[in-house]
Image 1 (cartoon, rainbow, N blue to C red):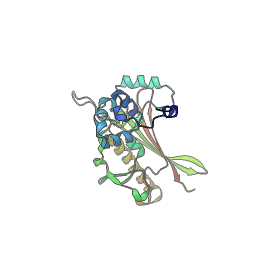
Image 2 (cartoon, one colour; image 1 turned 30 degrees about the vertical axis):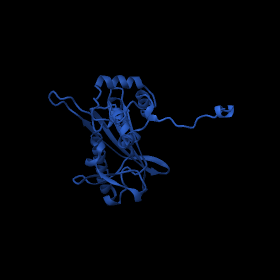
Image 3 (cartoon, rainbow, N blue to C red; image 1 turned 60 degrees about the horizontal axis):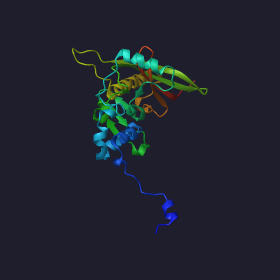
Image 4 (cartoon, helix red, strand yellow; image 1 turned 120 degrees about the vertical axis):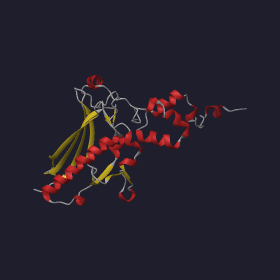
Length: 243
């Protein structure tokens, strides 16, 4: 005979996630970040078909995303209004990466944000994410801005600002594709290379003596302006300034 104590004891048996309805699995997975989804897609074959579906195109910044039209971007900007949450987000690989620019002719080396002894370098043209959309939602044009601030008397002083536009023009009957992660990264690399040239002219420091870019004191943000223009801004803080 089963005692009342036994009946009152809750079951500790786990319920397999894979036995949930697909719709519920998808809703749970949509709360995961980009890198978690990529890891699940790589190691869990049972979820690969689900993650390969169009429902996850936006979360995984897939290159199949169709860039929003100018009217759609304007409408999205109006909907977001003055909300602190931007209507535009940058590819997580841009947010998480660090890089060194040695020579524009030699390519670009990226490395992950890990302790120096565990750093792994990758060339931009070998990254699986290089052809993914640079932003969500996808856009076919943006302005990229880099600002660097120096520390003087416990205040941040703007010492350098440069920008460059990326625009996919029309090519016959072809649909304009999205700005890719590689295009955004390449533009940031070019702006960093210009910064190094600026420093060489400024105080004669050698390029090799400069910190990697970004150097851990940077902020990357994306903004959708009222006219539908997309702007990605990288701000770097903490560069030492001498009086």
